[in-house]
Image (tube, rainbow, N blue to C red; front, side, top):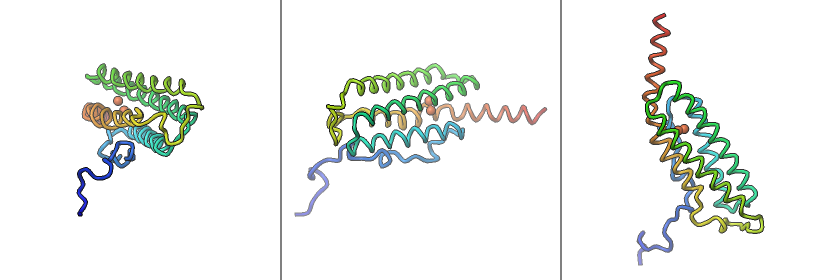
Length: 172
Ligand SMILES: [Fe+2]
Ligand SMILES: [Fe+2]
């Protein structure tokens, strides 16, 4: 009997996929500012790394440290981006900052949850944290939901501001 794709042994689960398999990072995610692009990439790479370690059975102690580091990276990045957007008088900054705040809150809550897990709860294979471990969703929200939509919305205003600065500089 030939095998068909439907109803095969087990459906593909999210946790069977690597982040890099789901999202390819590349120039299509560039906002046109090298510093921000580098920060986005670092967050994405680190997020993907955390997710991979979870898939392969991370210990809770290590996970706590990683989540704290991710929180720091995000705080630094958001602050940098918000200053830049304020500097160009970005029209939708309020909404953008609100999204940042909501993502930080989500990650902070995750970090707090990890604090409540004792090392005795630790379980190689990640069963304590699975199957719907929210870091995966969080990374997807950041990469797909925020960078690919909200951050892309400021690309044009940022470019326009740069052009007008260059125009002003050139006219002196
Ligand atoms: Fe942003
Ligand atoms: Fe960003």
